[in-house]
Amino acid sequence: MRMKKLSAILSVAIMSGSASALDLLQAYRDALVYDSQFASAKLQRDAGRERQVQGRAALLPQAGFNASVAKVNGDGSSTSALTGLPTPFKLDYTDQRYVLQLKQPLYNLSSFIAFDQSKLQVAASEVQFEQSRIDLALRVAQAYFDMLASQDAIAFIQAQKIAIAEQLASAKRNFEVGTATITDTHEAQARFDLTEAQEIGALNDLEIKRNQLALLTGQVPDGLRGLAAGVKLSPPEPATVDQWVVNAESGNIGVVAQGLAAEIAKLDIRRASAGHLPTLDAVASYTDSKSAFLSSPFSSTVTNIGVQLNIPIFSGYATSSQVTQAIALEEKARADLDTARRNAAQGARSAYLGVQSGLSQVRALEAAERSSLLALDANKLGYEVGVRINIDVLNAQQQLYSTRRDLAKARYDTLVAGLKLKAASGALSEADLAEINALLEMH
View 1 (cartoon, rainbow, N blue to C red):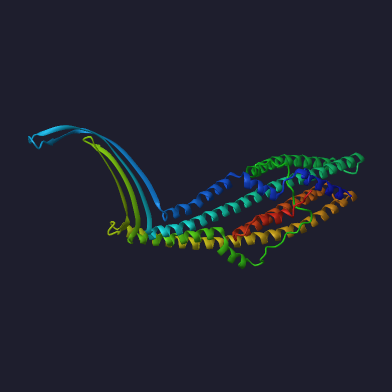
View 2 (spheres, rainbow, N blue to C red; view 1 turned 30 degrees about the horizontal axis):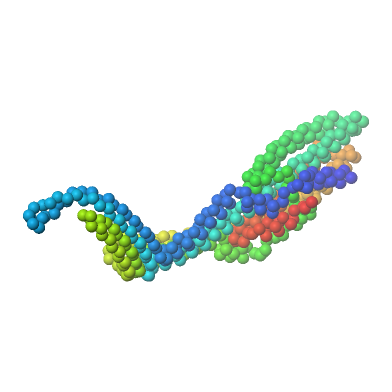
């Protein structure tokens, strides 16, 4: 009966305040709106999208207008046809010039390649943004379960304190009737005081974890919804580590981003080589000039339409050097891609082992919880019949609640490891958070 009472108290303590408790999915959605690091990544992506517009601009017509007005003042002279002598005069007039220019590239391989590169750069910015979203999901999940572990630790400590208080009251009653020594009372009192000290430390840790979650979501939750009673954690699917490695080597966000960087570097070689090729542009201009010299007004309009051919002959080996540089950078990008694939494969293996280890630890702690509960019941019965002393019961109580605390933490760590495994393969989405959210107790 006492254990049933303690279990009921523990359940109430764990889920206290759950009516207004935050769940994982809502925390993630709040973070999407509030987190400044994610907001920065979103703005970086928006800026990256403009690269394609800028790359296409070099292929479109370029128009410009130039206007100039000049005031001319000075002295001059002219030779008289009659006398042959110089005749001085003053220069004082205004010169106005208006020029409208239009240029349309007809052939410029470098600009076409730059446009292709801009498309890849936009894709790279989208990939980087996706990585930021995945990182945010992991940060929120880690902060959520860290706070939940602290919340549970307090609940377990408070439930343990209630159990110790009952044991202390029992020791005092037994001492009063002469069936126990004062040592039992002192031992129970010491354990009660120790538990109170642990409760203070746990409350402080909860506030720290609460603030860490609030930094991501902008909300300060009173409590969090925990895992439903008796929840069973599923093993990773697919079940083999090799398939996760294969998925990571192709789908990992870091691999995809580095693959795009390698393609951009490859185009850099062609772009640098295009510096040896001629360019051809259609050009047109309209010029309107007005001036007055020696009180004689003068105006003219000139229209030019034609093509302009530019042939590079020698640039001091600059173009050849740029090609050599681009080749080296492309080889570097390929090496970086290999590194990204190897790191992704290693990350997938580590995450997979983390999930498997977590599941094994959960199973072991579940068995330890059952054994600790039986041991506590046996020690209580032994204490009542006089074959066990009070310290045995207190130790058994501490073992049970420590095991329950460790079991809860192991479950949280396993869930986070599962998210990291999906992140390693580039497949982590809001649906995965929703799947975990469904395991939480809803009230």
